[in-house]
Image (cartoon, rainbow, N blue to C red; front, top):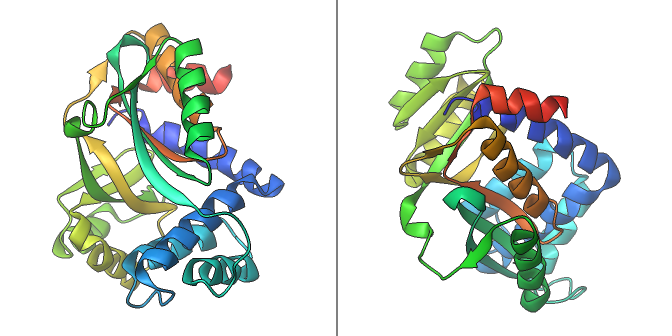
Length: 250
């Protein structure tokens, strides 16, 4: 996982800048709408909705925006086009696998935009299943390591069902999807506040490349993430500290 923690920190800073422009709120609103549509508007019983709302609150999304997105999902608010959530698969240069999670009101537009970026930057789209078999879905939490009692957070996570606790720039906690709520509640009860949490697709194995090739792939991932319809991009790239430092300095 070396380097991933630092890269995540850079991405969070970028997301904060996006939030100021309102760009990230559109993505969060779509996620809330989809969750409410599929599981109802009560976050107490709708785990996916609770997850989406937690992410929105962490990004300081206004309460009225959250409520409007929930109403849109439950059908109380008919405004806007029908949204669809799906996962596309592809490859970045050097054979790095990509899973691209999107929420869109126009699949044709979204696929065309993703294909254009991948083709332009040395990658390509892949058939369904060609990449996804290399990943597993897991619960993920990141807590800033500075000033944290590592033994205390380790106990809180593991006792709640976490499989792994990794200490880098962040303390990263990974566990089964079904343990997400227990881990989240345990961290909260102990006073730990994640800066990032949610469900992720984690690679079973990673690909390590030379720094220049790693940077090439990282730029492809960032370009895809910048598309309006893209929620998240997961890859099996092994990111090194050196690559992150060079990207940050660019």
